[in-house]
Length: 194
Image 1 (cartoon, rainbow, N blue to C red):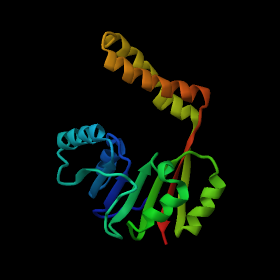
Image 2 (image 1 turned 30 degrees about the vertical axis):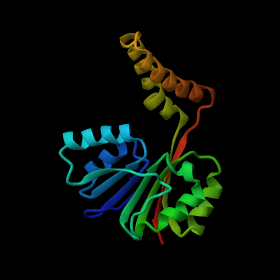
Image 3 (image 1 turned 60 degrees about the vertical axis):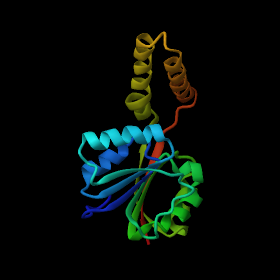
Image 4 (image 1 turned 90 degrees about the vertical axis):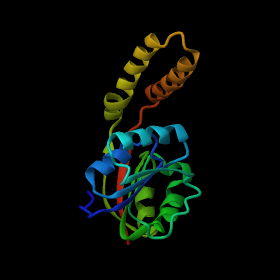
Protein backbone atom coordinates (compact mmCIF):
# COMPACT_ATOMS: atom_id res chain seq x y z
CA UNK A 1 0.00 0.00 0.00
CA UNK A 2 3.01 2.28 0.35
CA UNK A 3 4.38 3.93 -2.76
CA UNK A 4 7.95 3.26 -3.72
CA UNK A 5 10.15 5.82 -2.01
CA UNK A 6 13.72 6.51 -3.01
CA UNK A 7 16.10 5.92 -0.08
CA UNK A 8 13.47 6.40 2.65
CA UNK A 9 14.35 7.05 6.27
CA UNK A 10 12.45 4.43 8.28
CA UNK A 11 11.90 4.01 12.02
CA UNK A 12 10.76 0.57 13.24
CA UNK A 13 9.35 1.14 16.74
CA UNK A 14 9.44 -1.93 18.97
CA UNK A 15 11.52 -3.89 16.48
CA UNK A 16 12.35 -6.85 18.75
CA UNK A 17 14.82 -9.16 17.01
CA UNK A 18 14.24 -7.30 13.77
CA UNK A 19 12.10 -9.48 11.56
CA UNK A 20 10.20 -6.46 10.16
CA UNK A 21 13.36 -4.32 10.29
CA UNK A 22 15.26 -6.70 8.03
CA UNK A 23 12.29 -7.04 5.68
CA UNK A 24 12.02 -3.24 5.43
CA UNK A 25 15.73 -3.18 4.53
CA UNK A 26 15.18 -5.85 1.88
CA UNK A 27 12.21 -4.00 0.37
CA UNK A 28 13.81 -0.57 0.30
CA UNK A 29 17.15 1.04 -0.23
CA UNK A 30 16.58 3.19 2.80
CA UNK A 31 18.17 3.93 6.15
CA UNK A 32 16.42 2.02 8.92
CA UNK A 33 16.53 2.42 12.68
CA UNK A 34 15.22 -0.50 14.72
CA UNK A 35 14.21 0.78 18.15
CA UNK A 36 13.57 -1.41 21.19
CA UNK A 37 14.36 -1.55 24.93
CA UNK A 38 15.33 -5.24 25.02
CA UNK A 39 19.10 -5.37 24.58
CA UNK A 40 19.26 -9.15 23.91
CA UNK A 41 16.76 -8.69 21.07
CA UNK A 42 18.82 -5.78 19.71
CA UNK A 43 21.95 -7.94 19.94
CA UNK A 44 20.20 -10.56 17.80
CA UNK A 45 19.18 -7.84 15.33
CA UNK A 46 22.79 -6.64 15.23
CA UNK A 47 23.92 -10.18 14.31
CA UNK A 48 21.34 -10.27 11.50
CA UNK A 49 22.49 -6.89 10.23
CA UNK A 50 26.12 -8.00 10.12
CA UNK A 51 25.26 -11.34 8.48
CA UNK A 52 23.31 -9.50 5.77
CA UNK A 53 26.10 -6.90 5.38
CA UNK A 54 23.66 -4.05 6.09
CA UNK A 55 25.59 -2.16 8.77
CA UNK A 56 25.69 0.89 6.49
CA UNK A 57 21.86 1.05 6.31
CA UNK A 58 20.36 -0.57 9.42
CA UNK A 59 21.03 0.54 12.98
CA UNK A 60 19.65 -0.92 16.22
CA UNK A 61 18.90 1.67 18.92
CA UNK A 62 18.12 0.91 22.58
CA UNK A 63 15.47 3.42 23.59
CA UNK A 64 12.01 3.51 25.08
CA UNK A 65 9.21 4.54 22.76
CA UNK A 66 8.29 7.05 25.48
CA UNK A 67 11.68 8.77 25.25
CA UNK A 68 12.45 8.98 21.54
CA UNK A 69 14.51 12.09 20.95
CA UNK A 70 14.67 12.12 17.16
CA UNK A 71 14.32 15.54 15.54
CA UNK A 72 10.94 16.47 14.10
CA UNK A 73 10.28 15.31 10.52
CA UNK A 74 13.11 12.73 10.57
CA UNK A 75 11.35 9.80 8.87
CA UNK A 76 9.50 8.99 5.67
CA UNK A 77 7.99 5.89 7.32
CA UNK A 78 7.32 5.02 10.93
CA UNK A 79 6.56 1.31 11.29
CA UNK A 80 5.08 -0.13 14.51
CA UNK A 81 4.10 -3.79 14.77
CA UNK A 82 2.54 -4.54 18.11
CA UNK A 83 4.03 -1.57 19.98
CA UNK A 84 1.30 1.06 19.62
CA UNK A 85 -0.83 -0.50 22.37
CA UNK A 86 1.92 0.27 24.90
CA UNK A 87 1.50 4.02 24.49
CA UNK A 88 -2.16 3.89 23.45
CA UNK A 89 -3.66 4.31 20.00
CA UNK A 90 -4.54 8.00 20.09
CA UNK A 91 -1.46 9.01 22.10
CA UNK A 92 0.79 7.12 19.68
CA UNK A 93 -0.75 8.73 16.61
CA UNK A 94 -0.31 12.17 18.13
CA UNK A 95 3.20 11.62 19.53
CA UNK A 96 4.62 9.92 16.45
CA UNK A 97 3.18 12.39 13.91
CA UNK A 98 5.97 14.88 14.64
CA UNK A 99 8.53 12.24 13.60
CA UNK A 100 7.15 12.05 10.06
CA UNK A 101 8.29 14.20 7.19
CA UNK A 102 5.49 16.03 5.37
CA UNK A 103 3.32 13.39 3.66
CA UNK A 104 5.19 10.62 5.51
CA UNK A 105 3.59 7.28 6.34
CA UNK A 106 2.69 5.59 9.60
CA UNK A 107 2.05 1.83 9.50
CA UNK A 108 0.73 0.16 12.64
CA UNK A 109 -0.16 -3.42 13.43
CA UNK A 110 -2.69 -3.49 16.25
CA UNK A 111 -5.47 -5.53 17.79
CA UNK A 112 -8.76 -5.02 15.93
CA UNK A 113 -10.89 -3.93 18.89
CA UNK A 114 -12.67 -0.57 18.59
CA UNK A 115 -11.71 -0.39 14.93
CA UNK A 116 -14.37 2.17 14.01
CA UNK A 117 -13.17 4.51 16.76
CA UNK A 118 -9.55 4.02 15.63
CA UNK A 119 -10.51 4.91 12.06
CA UNK A 120 -12.12 8.12 13.32
CA UNK A 121 -9.03 8.96 15.38
CA UNK A 122 -6.79 8.57 12.34
CA UNK A 123 -8.46 11.55 10.66
CA UNK A 124 -8.72 13.60 13.87
CA UNK A 125 -4.99 13.11 14.56
CA UNK A 126 -3.95 14.50 11.18
CA UNK A 127 -3.64 11.42 8.97
CA UNK A 128 -5.41 10.03 5.93
CA UNK A 129 -6.11 6.30 5.91
CA UNK A 130 -4.41 4.77 2.86
CA UNK A 131 -5.64 1.25 3.55
CA UNK A 132 -6.06 -1.56 6.02
CA UNK A 133 -6.08 -5.34 6.14
CA UNK A 134 -6.71 -7.93 8.78
CA UNK A 135 -4.74 -10.97 9.84
CA UNK A 136 -7.29 -13.61 10.79
CA UNK A 137 -7.25 -15.76 13.92
CA UNK A 138 -6.75 -18.76 11.66
CA UNK A 139 -3.70 -17.16 10.05
CA UNK A 140 -2.22 -16.37 13.46
CA UNK A 141 -2.69 -20.01 14.47
CA UNK A 142 -1.33 -21.59 11.26
CA UNK A 143 1.52 -19.17 10.66
CA UNK A 144 2.67 -18.40 14.20
CA UNK A 145 1.23 -20.24 17.18
CA UNK A 146 1.02 -23.76 15.74
CA UNK A 147 4.65 -23.72 14.52
CA UNK A 148 5.70 -22.09 17.81
CA UNK A 149 4.03 -24.85 19.82
CA UNK A 150 5.70 -27.52 17.67
CA UNK A 151 9.11 -25.85 18.16
CA UNK A 152 8.55 -25.61 21.93
CA UNK A 153 7.95 -29.37 22.05
CA UNK A 154 11.14 -30.03 20.07
CA UNK A 155 13.19 -27.77 22.34
CA UNK A 156 11.78 -29.39 25.48
CA UNK A 157 13.25 -32.69 24.31
CA UNK A 158 16.58 -31.10 23.40
CA UNK A 159 16.93 -28.99 26.57
CA UNK A 160 14.93 -31.06 29.05
CA UNK A 161 17.63 -30.85 31.76
CA UNK A 162 18.23 -27.12 31.43
CA UNK A 163 16.11 -25.25 34.00
CA UNK A 164 16.74 -21.88 32.31
CA UNK A 165 15.56 -23.21 28.95
CA UNK A 166 12.49 -24.80 30.56
CA UNK A 167 11.58 -21.45 32.10
CA UNK A 168 11.76 -19.69 28.72
CA UNK A 169 9.79 -22.47 27.03
CA UNK A 170 7.14 -22.37 29.76
CA UNK A 171 6.71 -18.64 29.17
CA UNK A 172 6.33 -19.17 25.41
CA UNK A 173 3.84 -22.00 25.99
CA UNK A 174 1.78 -19.68 28.21
CA UNK A 175 1.42 -17.33 25.24
CA UNK A 176 0.24 -20.23 23.06
CA UNK A 177 -2.28 -21.30 25.72
CA UNK A 178 -3.53 -17.72 26.07
CA UNK A 179 -4.18 -17.60 22.32
CA UNK A 180 -6.00 -20.95 22.45
CA UNK A 181 -8.29 -19.61 25.19
CA UNK A 182 -8.93 -16.30 23.44
CA UNK A 183 -7.94 -16.38 19.77
CA UNK A 184 -7.79 -12.97 18.12
CA UNK A 185 -6.88 -11.57 14.78
CA UNK A 186 -5.13 -8.27 14.18
CA UNK A 187 -5.24 -5.34 11.80
CA UNK A 188 -2.66 -3.36 9.84
CA UNK A 189 -3.46 0.31 9.29
CA UNK A 190 -1.55 2.34 6.71
CA UNK A 191 -1.78 6.11 7.13
CA UNK A 192 -0.27 9.21 5.57
CA UNK A 193 0.47 12.42 7.41
CA UNK A 194 -1.67 15.29 6.15
